[in-house]
Image (tube, one colour):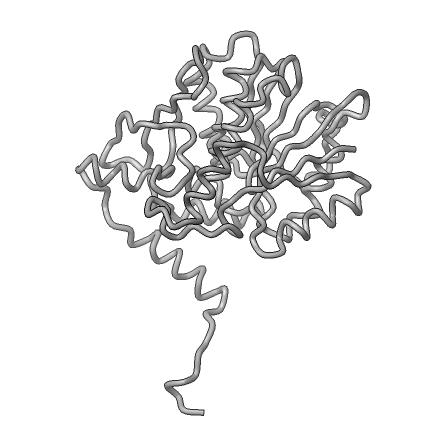
Length: 304
């Protein structure tokens, strides 16, 4: 075989070094607001755009920006979130991931599935009224904050396994504390493989999560956590919004069944989400790289 016809696949180690190099040699933040907003962690041109957001301010020397989310519910408060700017990882981010055996996705950006989860929760507020709720793998916490601000939940815990991300969550809780009324809201560092969950065991009426099934090595622990956290007295359920991502979602659901849990999958669960999905599938230029397998979150409901 001639050398020029040989195709090679980059090794995972090579890909990791490429990411690290991009982090170390990133370009400086622009002083142009239009360019900055195009690089903000949640890019409206690369998502479902179900919850409008506006960049409020940014410091050209900072890795963070502040964003205002306008919840599409009459009379609901605005939410103010501090988020990372794209392409602004540093060595500390990678060190923390290695130390805690976690991924870095929660701090990279606000993923489109989180936007869909928040919108779904707003459209189904009765699910959370007077309930104890926990969001797993929350990232910046948009869905959990939306639940706390609009549904009259009894308590909302917004959790992530990355302590850096949890710092952002707590900052965002503090920034929006007046929006929660009587709902108790708190952040929590929660590793799905941690052994002692006695404080949370059999405690929550509803679990929510978005795009948390991508990494197969975490499936078993995630299924275990869902089973341990759900209340066994009275109705309880976990609501996951996750794309298929190859066989990743299917593999997670195998773990769910092995743990004796039950699940249902719904493809068309909201008219507006489905309309936008069809729009992107038909080639809408606002999301040129849209893929049903990797981008469209299915609704998975899990019960004991």
